[in-house]
Image (cartoon, rainbow, N blue to C red; front, side, top):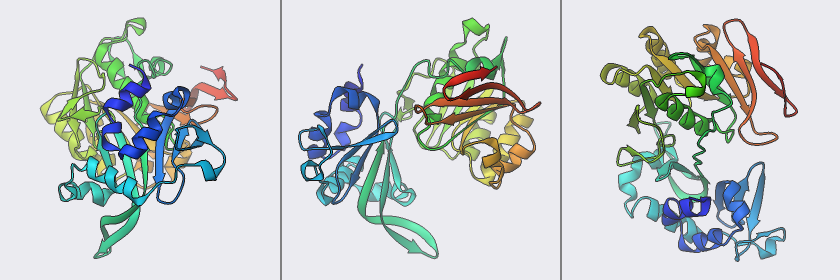
Length: 333
């Protein structure tokens, strides 16, 4: 299935019809590489692809003259919001409070607008003025290059932390890591293992009614929409995984759950926003995991020259660089 066909079945049904018509008419090369669709009231409709963004005209073609651009209207965002919520925003109160929706296919739609505060806490958003539709991408084999550093025959999985800035491909890699661990890797003499996946934002497994739509292999149990900390401990108690996978560690409870999993003899593969282990070190809670060297491997991702570039793979126990790219050239490992 090509990218346009995938979008036709997942994201187009929850976008305003006018916007769908324009995006559908965009060049195939742009749709194949698109990572985001951005709508801002009073501004041009944008498609982000790689490290560039393109403003679309009314015919779907990229334009450089803003006079030829399609200017997003409040109506476009309102219609999209109604389609996402099935005309019942009240039922999606928690999503509105968090500022994002996740829809079929694992696409995440971020919102910006006027904040409603109560008691010093964000309660909801209203008067939505901008949307960022982050397009999920399932790439079978995306993790091929890093799997030799993450596993050892016959069934050992190194505790691994993926570190990268937004849009660096962390979720795409986690999805394929789960699939490969669940299926087995004959070329590495690695046997399949039982995997527990906590998908708090419904992006990794792209569940629909609790059933993954992404290819995760035959041995993955998914807790969809569950907070990471609670989900990790729940899976360990109920499903007996050998590996737990989750994304975007950040809270104190997340750090505690990682350590509980390791104490239970369960390997952990997770991700965090950052640019290096040293960058993450300065953050509360997750930085403590770095200090304690609870992870065996750090995989650092970047966005240049391309999204998903593996900048380095570090062995945390001896601080040895297993894999390093400089200017696109592999230097060691």
